[in-house]
Each structure stands twice: as structure tokens, then as C-alpha cells.
Length: 145
Image (cartoon, rainbow, N blue to C red):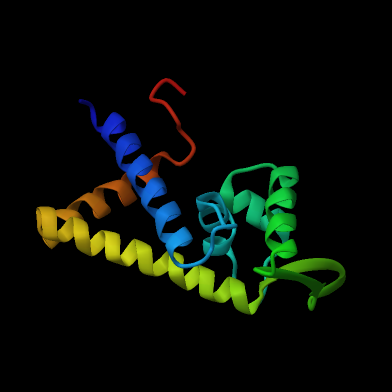
């Protein structure tokens, strides 16, 4: 199997595990996409939804739907942008802080689990290699692009 295929399979394992972890922690209304595309990308002092959309690589309309879902369920709040009162920023609500921490704990536990399987140094090598690939090829989804 080629490395990109294994990355996809590993990603599927991460997403499935994250979903189970969120449900077990009492966040059954939270999906992995909420953690990956919103909660982990937010700045502590607030983030404009358009910036969140850019960071997540999704359309502003899709981000608006995610933000609306999270706001309705008490994970985040939209407040006036302190730098430009005409705009709004998204900030964590108390429930969102705890949910984001739950997601981060899952990722740390998963990394430790992988280290127990392969050895921490191999996980670090994989992490370094993937970071290099992401940093170098962020604008090139395929070699022919």
C-alpha cells in the first residue's frame, strides 16, 4: 500500500476514535468536523469566521453553518470585534473550552498510544516527515498540479 493510502486509513481511524471519545465525554452533539475545523483553529481572544474558513480550507458559507451549530449548542459565542466594532469574532464559551480540551486530550492520548505501538521516536519521525510534506506541498495537492 502506498503512503497516501495509509494516511487516509489513519485519518479514518483518528476521526472514528475522536467521535467515540467526544460521545463518551458527553459531547454527543459535537462532530469531529467541529473540533477539526473550528475549535482547534480558534484564537483564545477571538477569531473572525472568515479567517476560520481560510484556516480550515472551507468556504465562508460552510464555516457559517459550523459556527451557527456550535453557537446554538453553547460551545462558542459571537461578539463584536474589539479591533473593528463593525465585525464579529468567535470566542469560546465555557462548554467550548472544555470540548476543545477534550479533543486535545484525545490527540495526545492517541499519539502516546501510537508511540506505545511503534516507539515514540518513530512517531516523532512520522510527525516530522508529515510536517515537512504539509509545509512544502500545501499548495500542491497532486504532483501534476
